[in-house]
Image (tube, rainbow, N blue to C red; front, side, top):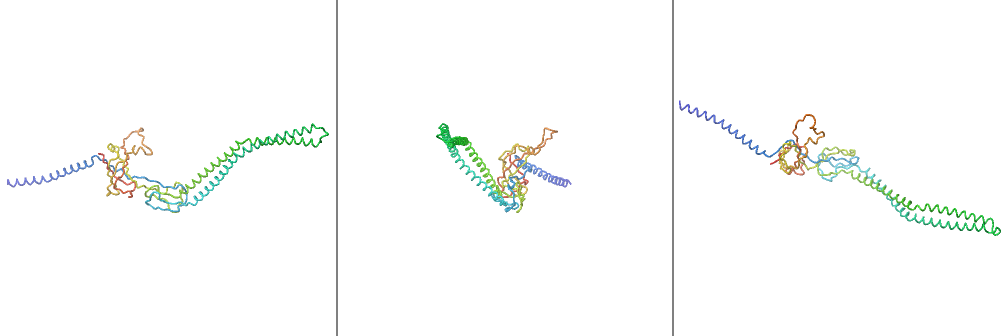
Length: 357
């Protein structure tokens, strides 16, 4: 009876020890797992408020017209300098020809004005000298006519005739008229500088006219070049809103070009920034591509929270203040795990983990 009781007690102790061992194992596993998790996450900061970001450019025409050639489709990869589409250029070719013809006409008029200015600088001084000489000659003629007239008046009436006296009187009158005419021409000829200045002003006016015509010709050439839309950089065509034969307006949004230069914008809580610095390594998990092993580094931290740059930032100085944890955008540059030519759409959800220590 005693032996049987001892064996039962030993069996019960053994059966009670198994759950205790299991419990102890579970506790140990939890402690080790928690410690391992704490050690693995110690010195790191992570957030799920992050997405892929990059440079984009909205492509719009600078001239209006019908689409003559379309070299792109949806999500097409293009190279910098590649012609994406062409607008019908006939109207712009005609406009350029007209502008060049106007320029040629204005240039011819300018050359003629310059020749006239050269002539004026010689002509008007010469005319002045000629007018002065004419005045002196007219004065001499008047002196001689006056002397003839006086002689006819003083001579014995029997030695002359009434006709000779009248002729001498008329000669003096004519000489006075010629002197007055010569003096009038002299006053006109004395405007040498004014006449030359007028010729110079004509040249300046035509020079300005040629400059304006040259600008019109240059603009016509530029507008003709605008009929070809080229890619400003390598990238992918997205949000295409143009078809062959479409009529395009100036500034109309045709499509968006997305650059392959992609980074991550992560919105960390303000309390997570204490140990964060540019250059720190980052592990990046992309929800759309879970198998990719992507790594990068912190490039920069925005100097202001996201709410500070909204259209209507909060005015904490008014009303009852309620503290809200702010988030600050952090730019993370991808170093490896993504090929340069690999299409990584913008706006994908990612989870970056920054090693801060």
